Image 1 (tube, rainbow, N blue to C red):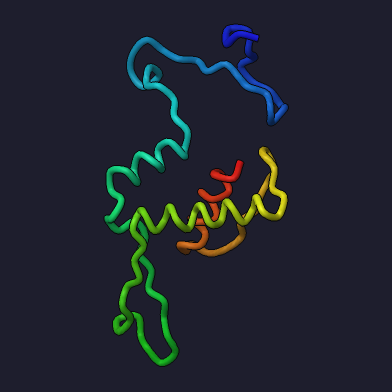
Image 2 (image 1 turned 180 degrees about the vertical axis):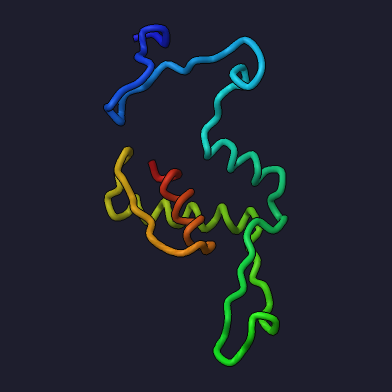
Length: 118
């Protein structure tokens, strides 16, 4: 099947679809995956801070608490660790993962890690 023969939509999660590309403007920008963008960002900003969090300790206020930082390279390490963990328990391409939690670095690690795993 050639790209011209692909459907514009499908209900089959494994089926490829035809992308509608324009000649100019936003529709002419080549598509890229989330992981392509993630890796490009890591290459550009590797040692810069990507995520920040204050981990409160008993008896301390938020003002007294230091920020914890993850660089883009740290982020990548955590993403790959999560993705490998999914693969080790039998995660297959197109499987689904539900991430239920609050806005935290671990949520971001698991989100992109799931994409990395398949």
